[in-house]
Image (cartoon, rainbow, N blue to C red; front, side, top):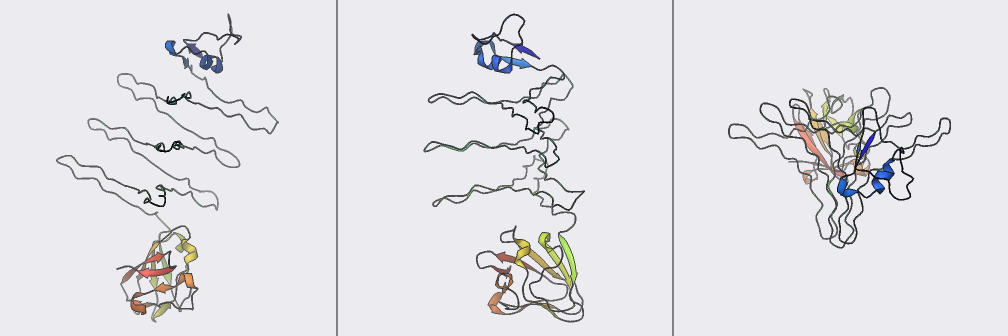
Length: 306
């Protein structure tokens, strides 16, 4: 490790032949010289590791910009990948949390909140680089972790806009496809459900209350074959949709003989699982037909869309 533009501060103990520490460099105040640290191959900046056998935690390592005073701004922390040669690839920046026997480490990015009477919160900007010539622009991927070896659930990806106060609307989530060039077509927005577990099939051999077939907790469509008789469904178990406020669900009658009948406010199912149907009448899904339901979280009822 080598240090540039450094001189030992008074009382630091630095002298001929001494090796400056990171604290020495940052404390030297020699900003006109552009203090910097050069890491040679294999060098690292890290917190103190715990002693072997101590069962203690390692110490944290913090990179922090300098504090401003009065009306001055705080300093930035900038992470730059290295510049490439004439035909090379630019250096990247990796933020990697360590694996752990108890759980993997987290990577957390939190912007500062405004603390004045009229101050904005900080923004998060994740932006891929533009391509040139025949090369594509960089992509942005947000992927939750899977669980391929155990019984635990896969991770979720949550994108949430900010809540409004008493006089303001909540923030919105905007998905914008790319504009096209003169000869091209505009981009599209694709919402893809999982490869499996989203469309489920079921066969009914009797009427059913509080309907909750296997897999409905992640389903967006249920294909039902009622066989040779009309099957009545008095409600769909809301417990399966606790993670999805105002969830939507397609019910398809894939049978060839009889309809599926949904009943209005039927006490055979618990209140929160019932249907609130148009005109208070039963709703029949004929063979080959599909109906879309939406859960009304205010009245706690399933309603027919359209």
